Length: 237
Image (cartoon, rainbow, N blue to C red; front, side, top):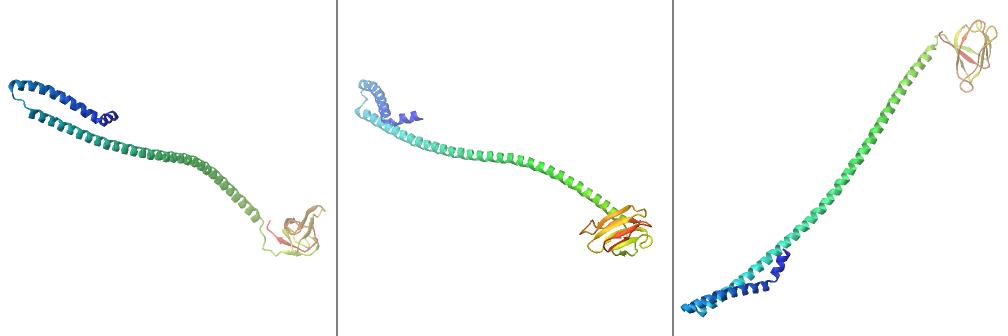
């Protein structure tokens, strides 16, 4: 296309060449015709002038055609340039979309990693929940056992026995049986000896000074010694 445009840009040379060829052909034809007409006496000067006018008209038509082709060529080149610009624009948009797609795929990969981490944490949470359930079940069992132990000490409906600070003999001062010894004041030493003189109980009653209440068996002949006021609560055997 560039060569064709270059050729068209030299239209004066082309026109001259076409005119030269036409003139030669015309001359040849004219010469032959002139010779024949001279021989026959039919060719005139006016016919030759008419032929030249026709050639000039043809040259003008060729020039006009060349100009039209140049205009069409310029228009085509403009459209080609416009198409190239649009192609560049679309290519830029395509590259932008490609970057967006790459970013989306990157986010998908990150989502898969996060999903895997979440699944691992969920499994760990399930395991911890199972452990909590097991511990809760164990607590319930221990609580039930504690309740049984607490319920095993059933207090009798008999009235408690108040003992002042002093010494007492089981069977005469205190009825034989099973008792829960509890402090009345801040607490005190509480000692029980068997009838044979062996030590059966040696504790400190009260939460402030000792270990709280104490449950023991009182048998006939046992010796009870308390350093402060205490209360003996009868409980079932």
